[in-house]
Length: 605
Image (tube, rainbow, N blue to C red):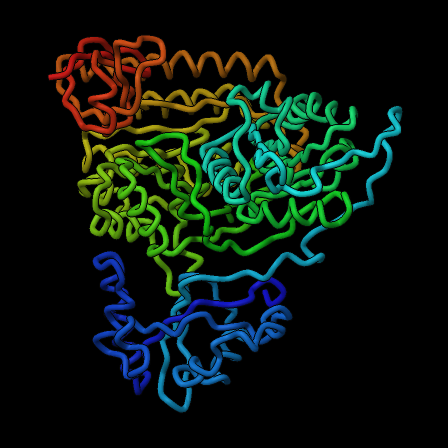
């Protein structure tokens, strides 16, 4: 903590007694989702600190006395102005004993009274060698005698002014897509420009090539090595190109990637997305050595803006990591422990998107129901949905992925069913319908408890869509167990189902079990399950025939220039005749005339 956290941005409410502090906390908790800045409102109405009260309790950036960088920079800090609001002894106690992170509210007592101290943001110190591993100095490549080189810097050409270029190749889930948008924003801020939009051409000429990887499925590592082939060939020819491997495979493999592909310059885990400039610069300044950054790290707010892939819909991360440790899943090992962003920082990002013309946001988290449980005091995902719905202006729709049935509460169901901006679309992975398989997966729920959630959803939001994820062929899955999965599907009838055949992943418990199923059995079950999924999706689509649905127009149909496309509140893709220049970003009513498993066709009303 002290090696990485340089400063905290603090606000406080000062009261006389513990009893008053208890009342203040009760007031704060009751208003968490109702006001844009409940802590600031509390400070202005209740705090006894005359120096900070009118500014919502603002203290400002407070340096960590146990961080080397903060101690060296102390002459430039605002320590004296902070001292009149928060004694040095309280600052030391805050850092030494509490070790808070963004969003935490800590109670401390001083000679001035009781302080309720809120951490708004965290400033991390520059990366130290403790967090950057340099396996070995560059050596000549076997067979060529060439020492692979990255660009010596990333500045524009001093003569022509031509900017250096980058190319990002993204594999995997929505979280990876969001990470790539953030990485692109960081590279833009460094002064680089995007290379040719064609990935094959881009990787052939870009000065920085970044591969954002996914390890959730089998053969992920081999796919990475296949993609690295032509890029590594450029280095073997003596070209100066920086090769960066990011994402879950990078976190999983670490230094092994460097050993296998010596042309790589930087290997970085998902926690380091906001620090790509430091890593690239470090690799360059170290004389061409290779950099591996995979150690656990606190998340801090990015100062740069992501380069979004759409002008209408945007991804917004609300919680990173996962603490669940399901026996088949690599996510805890590759994305780290759960770290929630503050509700205020999420609102700020969503509001900035609305101000830029965006109409829809999708909140992202590997286990989004866990939002806020790592904070002090704890928040909930229902709090966040209510907070955004009540306070953001200009956003028409709010979606989310991915939830966990173990933590899916009645409050979340009620929020999705009743909040006007939150779309009636429930994403609830069930993975299996058999209780023994679920136990072996360490999922923490049963067929029966899952169906109770479904019953509540259908009662409170009868027109909602229900989507899920399922794995077939998990170790030890019998024919009877597989039938239970089909039974659950028949009971629910999912609007959309993401289907997977189990594949053993590195560093997971289930990969080591001896009761693995043959590939032909997994394939046969997957095909049977997918046929049933298509049947149910078709039934769910057909319920829209002849009805009017509200569609947010996103873009032109790439297969038919006379049509535009968008989605219903329930997430169904809809195609209909229209002019994209006139309709982009607008909500329109469409009468459905055709229904297919995953999409609809209609005419604008």
